[in-house]
Image (cartoon, rainbow, N blue to C red):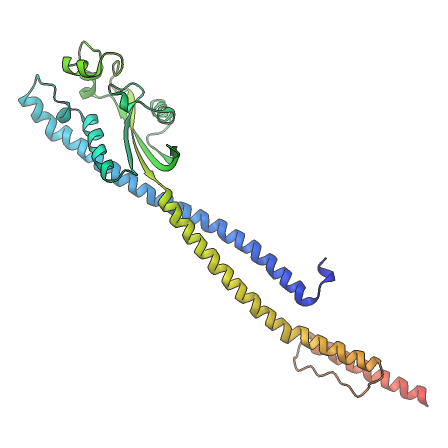
Length: 292
């Protein structure tokens, strides 16, 4: 099909094909790079959020709980002695100011049913319990929105067993508050849940798409200007000299031997013009011989 087109159109078609292929490759590579940047940014946010929660839990375990138990050994004061409760309540206050973030303490067997795992979270907890990985991170869907999530396991320690062994061993106030149907039977060292941090990716992905759109627009504009420049170069350096050669050759074939090929370049077109000049001289000599 290209053979049916003029040189100018043929080159334009080839350049257009190069544009489409190069734009596709550039956008694909750009999307991959920007996606990795989105993951990095989301991971930084989840790490900061998780680190803040961990620091709060460690402070409670090291400083607050020992003093509360020393002064009130027989009292049920979970807000100052139960790290899970403290994390959940702290997360709620954070989410009041930043509702787009989600922090969950999730367990397949929780005392508080608000902390019951969904199908996705339960699969992660089972993977932790089976020793498939120590931490997990990746993209997840929740409530119709896309998040980047990070999860770390929660194992039953000495401070957990006294609450979660049996209802008989647990504090009566706790049993009265949560009942006896769930949240018991924990074993020392068992993975009983996980801490999940969900950070929305919509904003970061939208910014990535905007950057990609600007890149594609800039690339297209650059290529359009290049096409115009190449078209002008082809017209002045190739098409017009060839058209001039064709015009002169046509007139010479009709007997106008006074016409001459005038090509100022020093390339293949000049060589073609010189060949036509030699042909013209040969034709003139042949006609002179015939006249004699």
